[in-house]
Length: 467
Ligand SMILES: *[C@@H]1O[C@H](CO)[C@@H](O)[C@H](O)[C@H]1NC(C)=O
Ligand SMILES: *[C@@H]1O[C@H](CO)[C@@H](O)[C@H](O)[C@H]1NC(C)=O
Ligand SMILES: *[C@@H]1O[C@H](CO)[C@@H](O)[C@H](O)[C@H]1NC(C)=O
Ligand SMILES: *[C@@H]1O[C@H](CO)[C@@H](O)[C@H](O)[C@H]1NC(C)=O
Ligand SMILES: *[C@@H]1O[C@H](CO)[C@@H](O)[C@H](O)[C@H]1NC(C)=O
Image (cartoon, rainbow, N blue to C red; front, side, top):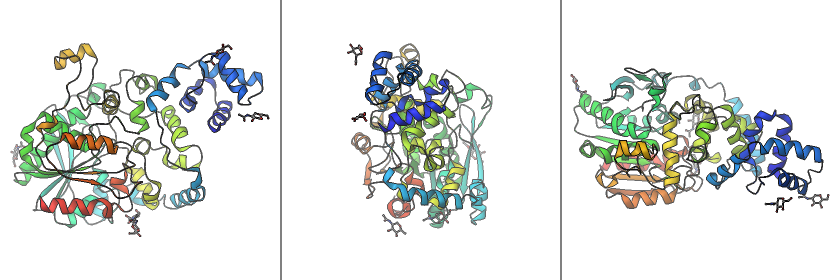
C-alpha cells in the first residue's frame, strides 16, 4: 500500500518516459494485462477510473521488466528504518554541519602529508600494459600490501581518518605499507594503447585484476624492498582478485606469507547488494540503463535512472536518501547507520566511488545466478573459444596454500555469512575464521566503522605479528 502511494505520487510528478524508473517498486503481484491492472488499482481504492487508466497504461508499456527484476532481487534490504525518525534528522543535521571538512577534497597524498605520514607514489606496468599506481607509506620493516574493494581505491585504507584507518595503524606499528590500485580506478586510468574513453580500456573484470594487476604489483614491491614475501590484506574485491591470482598463478603462493581477508567475496549467491543483483543475467540492466553503450563493456557510471530506482527501494525519500543513497558505493555495499561516523561522512563521500568497469559488477552478478566462483561467462560460443568448454571453468581454489585469516559479519550485503562459510570449507589453508561480534556490521564498515579498530583491526594486527 505504501509503495502504491509512492508510485502514485511520483507518477503524477514525472513524465511518462520516466515511469520506467519506478517499476521495481511495484509489488510482485502486480498484474500483467491492462484490465487486470486497472482492477488491481481500483481494489486498492484508486477509484478514479481515468486516473487508474493513465497509470496502468504508463506502467504496462514496460510491464515485462518488474517481474524479472522482482525475481532476481528477491529480498530487498533497506537502509533506513522509519522508526529511526528522530535519529535521521539529527544525522542529516550533523552531516550538513560537517560538510566543509577540508579532508573531503584532499587527495590521498595530501591527506598523508597533512597528518605527517611520508608518502611515495609508484607506477607499475602490467603484462597487458595497464599503468597502475601504488601508494606507499615507506619503512624498512616488513611490507604489507593492501588491496581495496569494489568501487574503491588506495583511499579506502585512509578514509576512516587518522584515529581509525588501517593504513595509519599499520604505519604506526612500523610496517612498510603499500596500497595497490586496480586498473580502472581513479589512480590507475592509464594504458599504453587505450584511453579510458576507449571501450577496449574497460574490457576487464576482477579476473584480470587477479591475473595481471596483483602479480605485477606484488613483484614490484618485492623488487623494491628486496624482501622475499609480503603480508597481504584484501578487502572485498581485494579478496576476490587474490583468490583468482592464486588459483590461476599458484607460483605466487611463495610470495605471500599471510593473507587477511576482510569480508571475503568468492561465492556470492546469497549477496543482498541491489546493484550486484541488478547486474545479474536476466535483469537486462546492462542494456536497459544506457551505460553509454549497450555492449556492457564500459566504465560503471550509474546513471540517474538507476540511482533513482535504488534510492526509492532502499532509502525511501527524504533527506537521508539525498545524503547517503546518491552515492553508488553505499547503494552497492550498504552501510550501518549506527557505526557510521557522520562527521567523517563527507570525507568518505569525497573519495568513493573510485571507478570500476561494468564487467566487474557483471562478473559478480553472474555468480548470483551460477551459484559458483568461476570465470567470466561470455556466452556458449565464445566460452568454447576461450575456455574450450561451454560453461566457464570454476576457479581452482585448491591451488591456494597461503595461510588465510577470514573476517566476516552478519549484515554484510556482499559477503553473506553462508557464502563465506562455503568458501571456508573449500579453502585448505584457513588459520582463522572470525565473525565480527556485532550484528549490524555491514560491508563498508570494514573500512569506515566508528569502532572498526576495536572490532577488526586489533585482531588483524595480532595476526600480522604472528605470521
Ligand atoms: C484478469 O482479468 C480477467 C478478466 O477481467 C480474469 O478472467 C482473469 O482471471 C484475471 N487474471 C488475473 C491473474 O487476475
Ligand atoms: C478501500 O476503501 C473502503 C471504503 O472506504 C475500505 O473499507 C477499504 O478497507 C479500503 N481498502 C484498502 C485496501 O485500503
Ligand atoms: C627491479 O628493480 C631494478 C632496479 O632496482 C630494475 O632494474 C628492474 O627492472 C626491476 N625488476 C622488476 C621486475 O620490476
Ligand atoms: C570521526 O570523524 C572525524 C572527522 O573526520 C574524525 O576526526 C574522528 O577521528 C572520527 N572518529 C573515529 C572514531 O574514527
Ligand atoms: C564503540 O566505541 C565507542 C568509543 O570508543 C565506545 O564507547 C562504544 O561502546 C563502542 N561500541 C561498541 C558497540 O563496542
